[in-house]
Image (cartoon, rainbow, N blue to C red; front, side, top):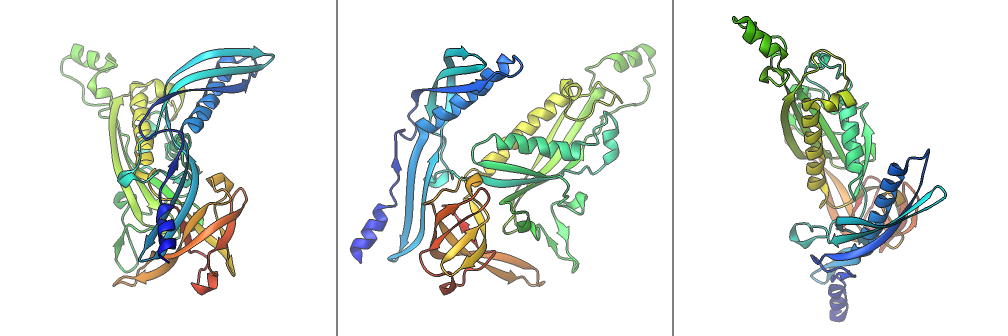
Length: 405
């Protein structure tokens, strides 16, 4: 028995090749792209992006195997092939054109990506993130500029930007509004008067996390204003485009809920302001005319910061998926190839328990069963595998979950 425990403990070591933790290295890679309608610039950008991805995978690939043993019993057992790296100092060293095919070779410095607290590696799986609508508290504020589509277009842009980050597969569900009372979001009052930040039925979205938001203010500081007694001063203020009276605010709150439990796990408020010189011109949101405004530029920067913060909040969170079916010792989960699941991956199984607080409001708890699911069949949107013991022995059911570590 002691020998078995030693073997399990030995397997908790990570086998990394070939990149040391923080040692940068130079690597070359090649990418190709098809030139469409003579657009060489876009083809070159596509080829460089492809080469960059290849360089990152080559330099930061590792095989990670981890097991946790407690009192001689296996608590969790996870195996994963992953890649993680940061590219910088990218240079094109060779470019070849054959017909309408462009080949580009790059040389870049690659460093291992920053790890997570406690030395935990970032999960290589794609977390499914759903973005709901970001409604406005005062829709009439959108009249200036015709920004009425901001409630759906803003989260769509955030989702698109986050999808470019490794480890995230974002989706838009902007037909949904998560918060019934915008003034008090994310808190809501239940029928019995209880206040809660818990969202019910979010697991039905088949997402792991739900990102929602509320746009609290996009007002102009003083769009009209009183006239100055001095006519010349008044004329100057009305014609000077960079005068502070043309400032426009942008304030929004962003929330992240764990879809499997409904719990609020992160929130933040973003505030900015910029010069709005378009007056009542209907630029629309996210158009060239909008981004050319100082106000539009400030909003774009704030959106980039929002994506960076969401990435930072979730990048070290374990991957989770819902169990959709069980049959003896065989289990199906609602994540597959598109989430990065591969045959041979091992995931820990958690049972769902429902508890009730003093007001009889239900909330879930997930408990580690100390059982492992080994994946052997993978489809684009689901996967299945076998447990190291029968599902019936530990009463594994639909809506229980699996997790990586």
